[in-house]
Amino acid sequence: MRHINLYRKPILRMANEVATHSDDERVPGGDSHRKRGLLKQPEERKLHPDTSKSSRLSRILPEGVPIDYFDPTFFNQLNPRERAKYAKTGVAFPLPQYCTNEHHSDWAKMGAKEFMVKYGNDVLKLYNLPTAEELAALEAEHDEAEEDGEPTDLDDTEDEEAMAED
Image 1 (cartoon, rainbow, N blue to C red):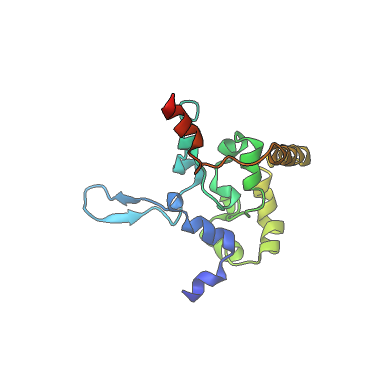
Image 2 (image 1 turned 90 degrees about the vertical axis):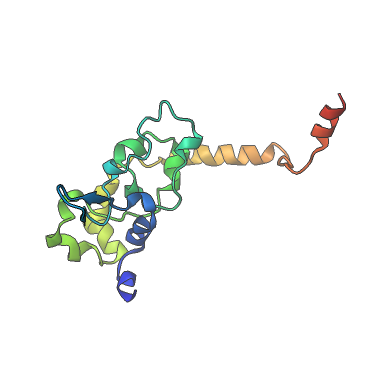
């Protein structure tokens, strides 16, 4: 397991997310399997193929995954609050042209700062990260919600008892 510690944390978080794992494929004409690769590409994950027909609950997003877990088109359609969750989760992989055997040893084990300068910032350009104004608006909403009073006590059954008496 020592070799795992050589990889940057965003790569490890990406590999830890089950939805990114490559599926086994049947080899035509045989019973054996072959792997397509370690991780699926974002477009292969089909996280939420038709969000217009799905409820918000069916669109629960994974926690703490690197931003490139998401296809940029899908990510950029998320609301600012959802996009803000992933603004600082890191970038796991460089752009596809650098995900080759020729380049693998270069980016896979380099330090976070070096990776971001050489590869990661180009990946981030594909993602619509929340602006300072959007983040300030989210903070103001949060502060306003806290000022609205005490949180609802979900263990309190007083209302239910009153309704039962009616």
